[in-house]
Image: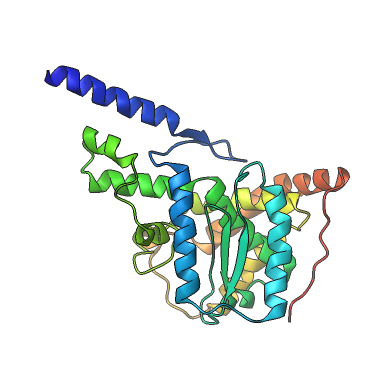
Length: 276
């Protein structure tokens, strides 16, 4: 009897695993998720609504228009990777926060402090494309799958239960996106950040933006945060800025070719618009 039950359960796990296999856009990496992407999208939309209640929404027409302009161009490029997205772009009036995020379902938030380091459309496109890349690569799905597996002690029955999303709430979803009190413990890992940089470069290039501006965003960030203490690399969830600069530099030829191809086929071209 136990053998039969174990066989059925193992079969359910195998089916769930096969259903959750996917290839990451651009990089082609094979990944596995035990969560329902539609449920992740539903919880993400709910979490985004909570964010809009917790933080004031900017009334700055220039910043809002800039985000809409850049966001809409990138959303057209990623359509096939996020075909069911209901896009929404919001600037939160939090000047001390240099941060941005994108959520499953097409929800994108930018804290106004980000404009200290994203000083033109191309630089903002680099940030937004990076955040959207986390979504299309389903990095949150990976993080939630691992968290649920940890909560169920890794047992076989727990693996099946994890597929129901029963252990996930909006707080955990926010943490998986790198937002909230527990963001550090559940933030994206170094490899996910580097992968999002890679995918984001290609996205922004296909939208007609100059991928070389991604390097300038990091330079601006280094300048703005100069003197602030940083955790040791082994404790950090992010790769070091020098590591990111090296990786982006190596990936620029691919991104520049994607931009040239987009322009040759009537894609959008970039005109850098400086926001003062």
